[in-house]
Amino acid sequence: MNNNYNTIELFYNRFNYLYNEIVYKDFFNYNAMYRYYKIREIFSVYNELLSYEDVKQYLKTIEEKRPPLEKVIVLDLFSFVRNLLLHFPLFDKWDDVYITQELATWNKVGRIHHFLKKASKIKIDGNGKLKYRIWEENKKVMTYISINFPEEYNKNNKIYLKDIISEKEGIKLCVSFMKNILDKSIKKVNEEEIKIMSQVYFPFFK
Image 1 (cartoon, rainbow, N blue to C red):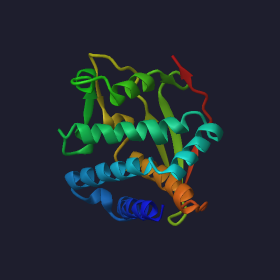
Image 2 (cartoon, one colour; image 1 turned 90 degrees about the vertical axis):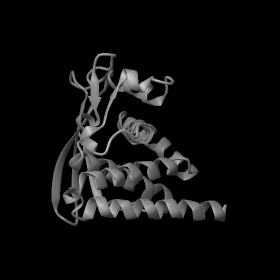
Image 3 (cartoon, one colour; image 1 turned 180 degrees about the vertical axis):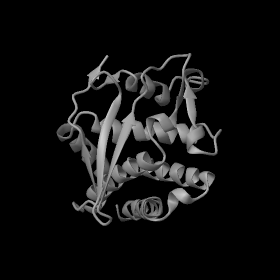
Image 4 (cartoon, rainbow, N blue to C red; image 1 turned 45 degrees about the horizontal axis):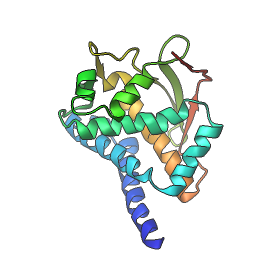
């Protein structure tokens, strides 16, 4: 158990290192390829930590007690991004990353394909947009952000990752969600460095 926790600590510390670089430094003034590498890495580290039992239990709590689409974001969407960046090493910049149905199913029908089928059916007030605000206490700054699920997914359309999650504001939202989940499940810390507030939404699955 102790060895297992030591391993979790290594992943958790690496996540925090990447988080601090992305959120607190002049990260988005860096070279686009460098940013892409770091973003890809933080999604991968987060995904590895999802196998830790305390994180699994916390995600169950989110599923039971939080708005219905929060689980889709913190588990399904984040896993989709990680899989897309990892399994399609075809790009050097966030804004260049795209997926098609042909690419998603080229060798098998897997998680990327299933996520896009599910996400394209989520509609809130007639579209797939989820609106969020994040409050950075240390900076006294409020940022307004949207996650945009694809309106359709078929063999004729090309879906750009930047249209689902913008690189600057969208990644800040994603890593803030990740940080809150890992802090509360692994370190049992309830204070949030960045407070995330969502609109009240009632999803409709077509």
